[in-house]
Amino acid sequence: MLLYLTLTTLLVVIDQVTKYLTVQNIAFNEVIEVIPNIVSLTYIENTGAAFSILEGQMWFFYIITVLVIGFVLYYIAVEARDDKPLGIILSIVLAGTIGNFIDRLINQAVIDMIKLEFVDFAIFNVADSFLTIGVILLLAYTLYQERKAKNN
Image 1: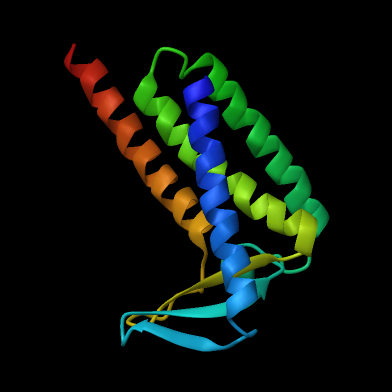
Image 2 (image 1 turned 45 degrees about the vertical axis):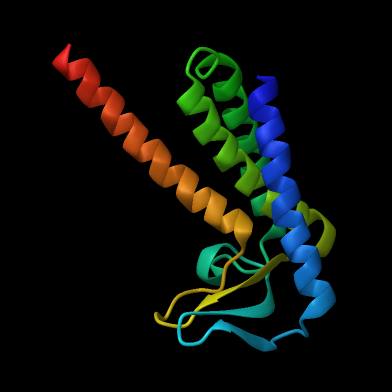
């Protein structure tokens, strides 16, 4: 469990440092090209979820996030105790959840900064990346485990 909590903490620190650096170095709505026509940095604040859905519904996000954190911690403690890959995947999901939760508590909004220039997509942050990667890995891992169980 210590490994998973350490990983979660490290990832949350990475997320929060990127957000701090964004706020300190990029003006609100300023666009800084990193790789032309590929990715830029743009500091915005999102009071909703992905694509600004449920904008301004902070109490809803607080309740859902606390439930998700509790659920993931339970799963790490019980299900991932003897399953290192699952524990690592859940740690990544937990870090993304906590990273955005910290923003909502402190700023009443999530700080986003990564903009993909080659596609019309929402501006996102490192915690969002952790959540996306974690959920994809969890899905792949679950499918792998089901296939493995079916073949045994």
